[in-house]
Image (tube, rainbow, N blue to C red; front, side):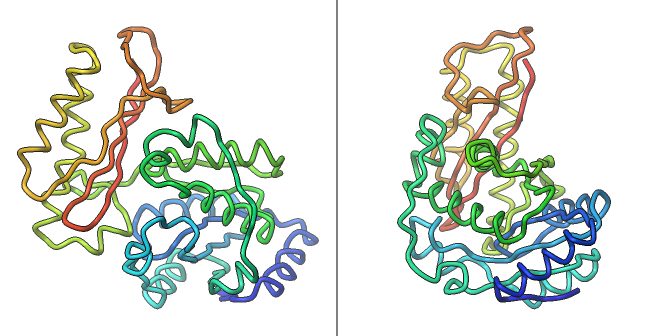
Length: 283
């Protein structure tokens, strides 16, 4: 596997791939790789001639400086994992390489960024859109792979691809979970063994909400989820939302049997670690 840290060198390599008629698959990450990332990489390997992975902890998408500082950085271990799954090229730039000067661009995604993650993390999706745009221009992939755990981020990037006419296909894969049900996340590395047990209740609360969808109105389901998590020591729920799976706008009334898909979405702090999770359910 080739490791490249400079944008100019990567662009030259990408140009060679494209001139040779090779199809490029791209998996953008912030490192601290886990099985969820590896699932995306294996899919890219199967569907493309060349697989490129980027590892870059993007400072512009963190609205909490401490969160950025504490984000796991495990480049040596990540490199070994990438080689094991047969990744062809790793792009691992530093911040100065990606942002040679301060970006003055501002992205707006309307109602899509006014809810859930966008509401609770001001500026987050502007940072995501900026870095993903840069990476798409640099890597020029034919396919880009993302995980469902970051459901709202995928929706934002889908709008970005459509709005800026990026010539690529977005591929989204289901969330990979640990045996306990905890969604795999780079942030899990910051959890203690006890906190991992506590965090598993996030998925259990989503399953509870799923069971209640056909029996109870939205406000009752929300109260039940809040009550369930309130009894779990160490968990501080930030939000739980039942949203339209396509628009991610809050749903106030459920229509069982309608065939409509809803997204059960949440964010919570387990100790000092902020985790998100979601579950898609067809009514």
